[in-house]
Length: 292
Image 1 (cartoon, one colour):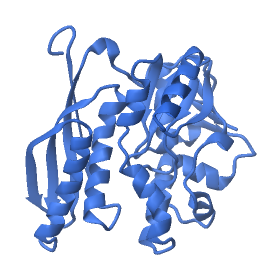
Image 2 (cartoon, rainbow, N blue to C red; image 1 turned 90 degrees about the vertical axis):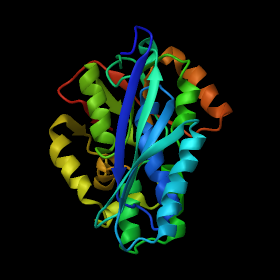
Image 3 (cartoon, helix red, strand yellow; image 1 turned 45 degrees about the vertical axis):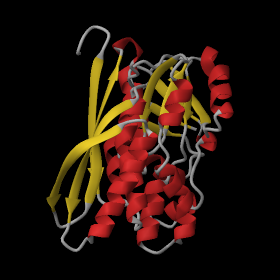
């Protein structure tokens, strides 16, 4: 706390390339790093570059990574104030991001209430698609929808919802949908009842999962979380894999009051932001999440 009406927020994230194009990689890494700020209802002010550079990476490629990141920071309305780089065997890039917010308006993952509507703003399955792309199981064109989504800032969903009655929010990243939704349910003292038919999924993700083309993170997330999840018998194994799939720069997950749903839908539609109503919060049961 800087003062009673002003809180400082800082977050940091960086990771190896998930795509081949260095500029796009920079965009995705920056969007991912900025996402935590948006998930808290804030808007970023300042960013610092974090860069690990192998000797095999050309100066032009390094420049393109940083240019992609800078473009997203500029789009976010923030500035890059420097950063730090080191030599490493594998390229890694990301940001340390700073924002300020009045604590009265901060979002957390702990405020969902029974009766709330649960909304997701980006499709799931980009981890599965990235794994398939690395194995040449899909073309770059088939991967493009996911890369475009990963490079899209959660700024626009945050801006659309910031004046509405948001009870809880989180972003969907490495712990997958089930991990982050489960944290929201646990912190809020509710169960999330999810309709799998309404879950947005990237094209090809389900069929790839059915073929067993999944990242190792799916199995790790499932092993850690499965005791807190109830899947009804109509939910396919491939859909379960998608729900456990670790995401890069995934969407925002909102719990909003039912009274705010109409205004939320109007704001998102006016601003042409995709979203899906995927379930509701109910009184706590033996599970954090029940998937139908």
